Image 1 (cartoon, helix red, strand yellow):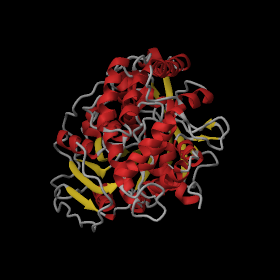
Image 2 (cartoon, rainbow, N blue to C red):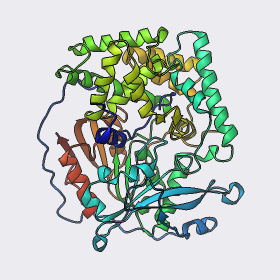
Image 3 (cartoon, rainbow, N blue to C red):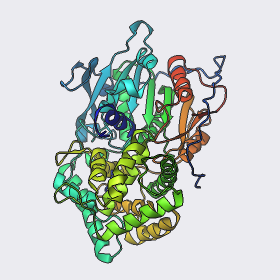
Image 4 (cartoon, rainbow, N blue to C red):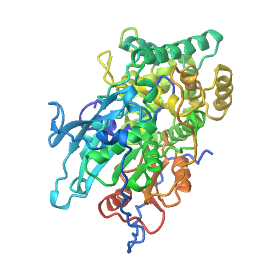
Length: 533
């Protein structure tokens, strides 16, 4: 059966909501091994209002932003490809919150599905799938899969494309052909010439972003996006924001909570990014996460009759490293004329499958079957799907805007010498993904827009937030969720002992019950919880 058809494809689309490393591809070790099944626990919940959501403190927006906060949304029918029940609209926000008149404004595009039980409506629930660069509109329009039916019954589900993303004045930097070249280029340069090419391609991306988006480019940072969210909250008529953020969406959510602590309603952050981490630290922890996930995938594969690699984890890992090394000089043929499977594309494909332990691992096994036989066609198809490439065109701008956001959000921009040092060190720790994630940092080396954000611990006091981690999450390792929980003193921590990226709606009734109960009643478990499934 072709894994790219029907419901399996749709399900993988929904779960690939990710924080991507900074390279051209759109991204302390724990024990590895096969899945360890166990029954879900039954959570116990607060029986009192001890952690009830506090009402907001009434605050007036700054005078120069009043017109943005008091606008009305004109909801209307979406385009024909939108699911039933959804309407679409937009809000106008300032490009620069510091100087709104000087830089003008842009439209943030949104979609809404009204609560199915209006008599029990609790307000709006804003969702963000991650990225940076993921479309919140597309994510929300998969609403039946991303939240439970009982949540849909009580909330208006709201998705939005953040500034510079998707339908909200998207950052577009280079042609599709140029993007093909960048994504396939050697991402672990071994020679001075290869390093020079990598740096040149990185500069081409940055220069193109500046040339085509000079007005907006300096303002696609996460703080500005979080401020946009507060305008969305106000025009929806909600005193406080209810929010589900996954992956990068957790960083967006924690930023909002820091900026507007009294306006935090029922917040769930799933697959967490530690705000203390700069780009270097984030890339290194992802190298750890993907290596950990790969070993678990190989352990699971060894127990299956259709496993295409060796049945011993260490032997299979070495087998894949050998294939990766070979493609560095001899890319693998595919049925797409002129597009062989290069080393960079292969490593991207290996990363892609780790995002989901059901559909993703199945797709990875299918793709590896061809790779082992010397045919890169199925792996290239997997990569194209992940990168939203279809018919030679990229359907969205996620591969370009990610660099813009990450490079502006954090000040560290390692030069070639520092990056090479990281790559050599990480390659020893994480031989499959360490070097490629290190060299991805060079995208920011000469980024044309200045950094306006900084890596810093979350601080403040807000309503209780539910922080969710997945023990073997590859893209946002569970260490990030634990770290943010320690920083947010009033938070509750929920961990799922599972595989794949994020936890809510990924197959654990325990996790889903806790999240749904919080959204619908505002109550949390009496203590931190671990769900096993």
